[in-house]
Length: 200
Image (cartoon, rainbow, N blue to C red):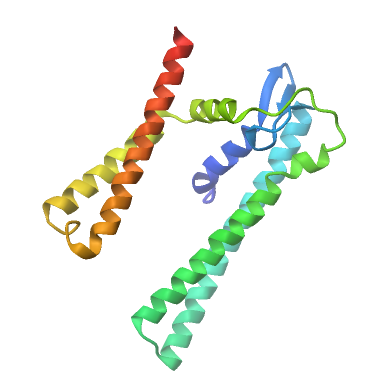
């Protein structure tokens, strides 16, 4: 389906809250770190189906809302007329509102299992921050981390070579880009160390 590829990572993150512990048995951890609660395969399937329904509705709402907004913006601009700067500002504000709205809904819907299971006793404690970091790093793939770094590094090198990124007004973007690449490289290093220590 058209929404599938765009939201597959979101769906995978939700499903990752359910950890298999046996045949048709799972432990649910809220956001991957909460206290483990035992659920059946049927319950897990029901939660994931409900989340998939939310993703489909969210996709079509975002698409329909964006199309309606752009059409309304074009009509208003044609009748009233305003500068490109104002047009861009309004567009980015709308984009920000849509992102914040989706994240707020996602935060609520992704926690739906914990609300339904709140009266079921947990079978252990929450993960410590260190344990959660290790679990999160293990879920990431090296390719998913390295490929974006290579792509952004290539764009950065091209911008530096043609002198665009070295202009004074772009120095802030240069610093942000370099720091971002450094952070991702540090994450890759941490993941490599964790997996190496587990193999020894």
